[in-house]
Length: 395
Figure 1 (cartoon, rainbow, N blue to C red):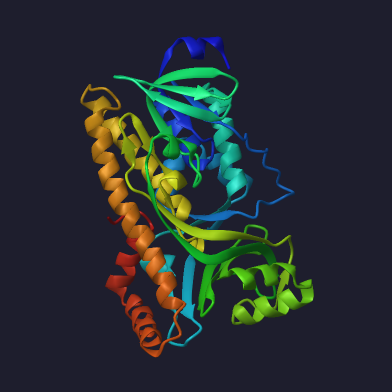
Figure 2 (cartoon, rainbow, N blue to C red; figure 1 turned 180 degrees about the horizontal axis):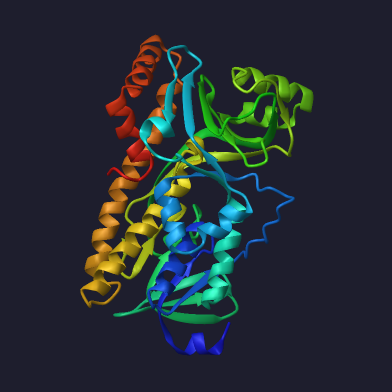
């Protein structure tokens, strides 16, 4: 750690150098704030020949934020797959729900991007902007009247006017700030892998709801698809271990052969699925963003968009304060931001959860309701409204 950082009081410290934390730190730096990042596990460099198994469906508003941070061109140039359609259907029957860019009057619905690539390009941008990244763990937070002292591993300390915790679902900042979480363990796992397809993916995201949980097939730039398959724990563990030929046969059946025969083309990894909602996003001069504030069900890779919306709205608040010649971050602004984001994140998390519960229910009334909902979603006004919300344009 630079001695000068220890001696001065920073405007802000962001804990966590993932997508959300890096985007926030970069945005604050671009607005003239003296900011540093603390990260206990520095991310590995992204390598094109080793695709990250974690992928996201980046919504248009998230893309716009990354473009404003001057990061998106580098991401797109490396590897990003635009998708022009999304189709959702139910194994229980009924017409599929389809979103189509042309029908909605937009050039695309979003991009599929690897987690590691996004982090790598954001890290490069932080370095170019001169934002220091401190390799340390946060061991304590000591709030003062107008700042917070962070006690870091190695008996180091740093002071800042504001602390932003973007350090993931197991957030140390959240725990040290005494913020509780409302949690639900789904007793399920998400199975992720890359697959080769028998038919082209047509730049379309496919999602089928099965009694065991949703299966998403996300189009990738190299012609493969990335799957996120939500399954009961025992079933996920079984499918992660069965011989490759057996897995291929089972995933092909589960996908309804929408892309023909599917074949495994990467390792398989299963991770536990939980929902966590922080009881509040602010405690004094400490605020939470991203998975530290809300870990949600990974339906179609949408969770990262909630975190980037946390960032976008906070930066919008900073912009408004600077335009009015006020302090860029204040208790009033941060409280307003925290209330609004907490409300919207709770609604989104509960919506993902409700979709998961309804579509994993084989009881006849639930099946009938699902068929009606999918059919109604294809009505043009409702289709546009649903997509507008998913794209970040409707609140």
